[in-house]
Image 1: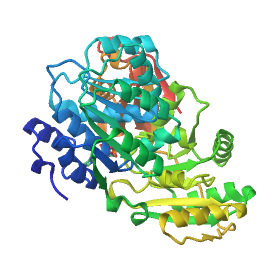
Image 2 (image 1 turned 60 degrees about the vertical axis):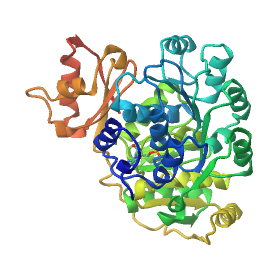
Image 3 (image 1 turned 120 degrees about the horizontal axis):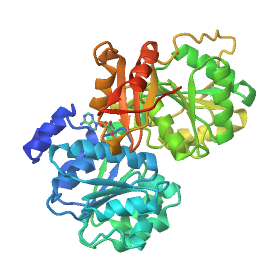
Length: 458
Ligand code: AMP
């Protein structure tokens, strides 16, 4: 593993990477940053968790002319959550220099506010294809000074049917540009996309990201009625710190989550029926450790900002093998060993065969001991999320919130976990046993001289 310092990057950038604890490059970074810095187009196979955002982020920021307030880079992401995560990571990497403005332009948010921000000078836009195509067609996003375009999770964008919008977006982009395409899988459609938009790209595939090397996969033969019991057995056997349980439908998500709750397990559910605000809250609460279990559909789970999920469960086996690869890629990140458990119903053996064929494996589904004892102890999450009705727009910083909680007579700093800010809301994770005290400190204290309303989100 090589250090970032071997790259021709300026010292402030290198110091900032160090302050983020990015000491050595991940495989994808080592292989893709040098050609990106040389200006080549790139076609890279990389999944979430591989460090791909920093790979293209460092490239984009390296060539950015900060004094020129024009959009110089556009990053397209399949989902709002991923766009949020990419924006946050780019902002962290951009900290080395003042005044770099990165805007997130996605659906589900008021268009006029986004267009207002676009008027007020920015350097980089991160967005979802539908909304970006819209602001381009309205003339409120102008790409005449664009230097680079990134297609992030390109396979997922195609799966979600964004091809028309992507074609439209490229019509607005200058021909002289750098195009970087990242995809977890290289299907024929992705290759076709690459041929249309990339110019003699450098191709990067990273051996060690091959999932089976670091992800332990088990398949259990169960019929539909046994699934919940089997899930409880596996959860009580592994007692994961973080588990993502995939269902194929919203209904199944609701059912599984309600059954787990009946068994006294703390869990959250995430699916397309939730409003944007609720989805954001669920993502924050799962990411900050306020729940160990999340039951989700595929689309909803994209873009979860979690470094390493201990375990994923395919409660329903997905219809597509590529979806299976995506799902299990959520565990075993950053070199840690992951665990992927899948339920196979009797009529689904053919899907397991397809997975074996695709991944060059020979897994068999095995029986699960349904007489095993279910012991749901020690599975209570250690954190709980509190929120206050003020955020970035109220100029509240994470330090302000930490200060309000740890004032004299307050709680200890080590009982405070992740702090996530949104425009008008801030979430803070605190240890469960001090939550009452923390709530009253937020509710009764002042932040930046102002009182805010606090809530317990449990
Ligand atoms: P990504 O694949 O872009 O979603 O990144 C996965 C996670 O790895 C993110 O939380 C990054 O902050 C982190 N990360 C990226 N590059 C490095 C690095 N070189 N060293 C340590 N962590 C990293």
